[in-house]
Each structure stands twice: as structure tokens, then as C-alpha cells.
Image (cartoon, rainbow, N blue to C red; front, side):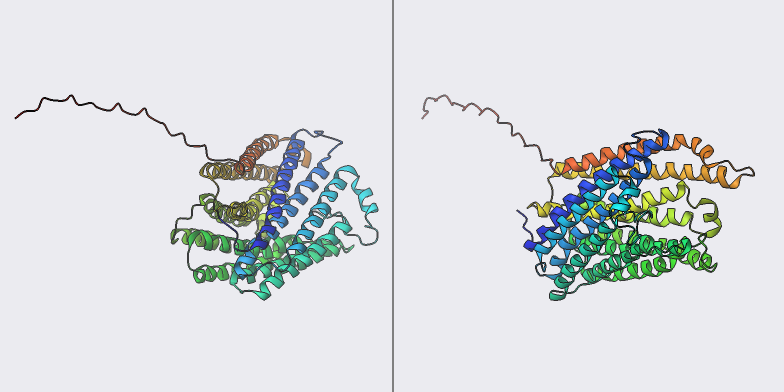
Length: 478
């Protein structure tokens, strides 16, 4: 039986379980939204489209945060070679975060959003109504409390133990995550300022500090499954993280093209955001290079597959699909179309969903008292990987096709058509996207089932004993 190196690592288990549960909810609401694109009154008025979309995106953020926290609670004690500073605080913050998140979703679904804002004190400090930051004021305050307690717990653990590049990069990313979220409380009446600083949360999370968290998690898993020298992996990480920060921070400007910001952002944003695929390409080279140089064949094949898949899909989604429409002359026609949705789906899945599933794939068997899952469970998990990943590729392709047609009919042809006229002509792509989403849900179901799968007991055929040969006595000869 494989035992945890440090008992406090067990704190990660409920975080991972909650993350997977919320992931299921996110996908279900995504499918509801997909049907509402083609059947406008589907589940109306019980779940209007704006509410389904809000729940879908909020669940995505919350379950990824649960995954990041679980990853930190698992890897930091092992990297720091010391027990977690306060397992009790970690458990307490888990329940506070989970209950606050659940109550927020219930509020979205049961109360009109305007009434929810009035009930939760939005008139005291107006923070609601912005995409991804729709949470009521008490929920935002709760997130701050949970983030500060989490940072205190992780920081004290790192301070009293061994310092490694992985823990330093991870802590830097987590501090940035908490710090940039504070801009969610700044909601100026000037629309240009509002959008300008709104991106300081949304962009600087997903194209900035979250990339540090992703790099630290991948580096940790690769050290464990490849046996490559830590120094080699850490050097690669420093290069990747430097590229990610330089291009991601200044590349924020590609969101400032059309919001009323100074014109120089078209040059700064365009140039640096065009360089953003570089750290993701370096991550692909890094992951495959480490696996090829491995000193041992780790029995957890599923975790290795998830790690390699993370690098490839992050490069495609965040790198290639991001570059497709990041330059101002192209973005002029494509911003706000389904091309943006295509990029967002593959980028989030490739960069962050898959890295959380990577650490869960590696750590969860150990948290359950064994080094790896049984062979049958790993096979099912790898089937789930391919079902979810291939279906996400098709979701992206269908949305890309819809976005190209939308840009052409709505913004490029001499007599542009109205928004709703164009939407009627995109139904075929929305139906195909919905079918691909169903396949994704099947893959997620297989993934969940893999946690409970056991190897079939081997049946040993017992053959009948061969009859004992009898030798007739021969007369003695002289």
C-alpha cells in the first residue's frame, strides 16, 4: 500500500472531490446553454440563458480554484518536506468556500439577479453585473477571506520547510491570483475605466498568474513520473514562466483595442500578445523532452497522458487559437464573435482543466492508499481523456466555423446582415457543437466511473490431475 509522505497532504482529497463535482455541474449547464442557442425557450423561464451562462462560467472558475488549492495542499508539504502549517484551517476554509459557492449558485437560480443584488448589499458597494464577476458582495468578500487564509497556510508551510523553484513559482502565482482579484471590487461608472481594470482580473488571471500555477503543477508531476533531475526541470520552468509573464502582462493590451484606451495599445498589445504562443510552445517541448529523458517507467500511465495532453492542448487553445484573432486588423472583424468562444473553450480546457485533472490523476490514487489505479481503471481514464479531448477539439472547430461565417455575414460583406439574421444561419454549427458536448459529457462520465473500476479477478483454470501411470511388473530376468 502506498502511503502519503506527510499526513496533512490528505487535506487535498476533499478539494479534488469538490472540484470534480462542480466540473460535472459546469458541463451540464453548458449543455443547457447549447440547447438554448437552437431552442430559444428551452427550460425557460426556470433557467433563462443569462442565468445558465452565469452559472456555467462561475462554476468553471470555482472548481478550478478548488483544484488549484487541492494541488497546493498536496504538493507543498512534499516539496517543502514538512507538514502543512494548519490542516484544520484548510478544512475550515474548504467548507466555507463550498457552502458560499453553493449558496451563490442557489441564489442565481432562485432569485432574479436584480433582487439578488439588492438583497446582498450591492447598493453599498456595487460590484455585480460584470461577466465572470457576477458574484454578490458577500461571496466576493468570502473569496477574499478564503484566499488570504489559504495563502497564509501555504506561505507558512513554505517558510518553515525546504524552498524549491516549484513552491516559489506556485506561491508567486497564488499571490498574484489573490491580488488581482481585488480589482473585482473596483467598478467605476466610466465604462472605459471599468473594462480597462476588469481585464486586470480576467486576463491577468488566465494569461498571467494562472500560468505560473499551471507550470508549477506540471513541473511537480513531471519530476514524480519521469525521475529527471530536478535542476533540469526547474531551469525549463524559469524560462517558460519568464516568457509567460512578459508576454501575458503586456499582452493585456490586446483587450484594449476598441474600448476607448490610447491607440498605442494596438501596437503594444498586438506585438506582445502575438508572442504569447511562445511559452506554450516551450511547454510542449519541455513536457515531451522530460518524458523522453525519463529514468523510469512510472506505472501511472494516465497521469503521463494528462501531462502531455495539457501541454499540447494549451498550445493549441491558448497559443494558436489566441494568435488567430489577436492582431488588431483581424480582431477588428472577429472580436465578440464565436471565434472568441472557440478560443476560450479550448484554452480553458487545455491550460487549466487538464492540468487540474493531471494532478488529480497522479495524486488521487495515493490519497486513496495506493501508488496507481488498477490497470482497468487507467484504461478507462485514458478513454475518458480521448473522448473529452477530441470532443473539445470538435467543439472548437464548430465554433470557429460559426465565427468565420458570423464575421463575414455580419461585418465584412457590403450589406451586412443583422445579428439575429446571422444567428439563424449558424444553427447547424450550434447543433454540431451540442453533439460534441454530449460526447464530452460521456467522456466525463467514463472519467468518473474510472474512480470506482477494479480489475476483474483473474480466473485460474484448474485442470484435472493426470492419471498416475502404472507400470506392469515384468518378470525378473537373469
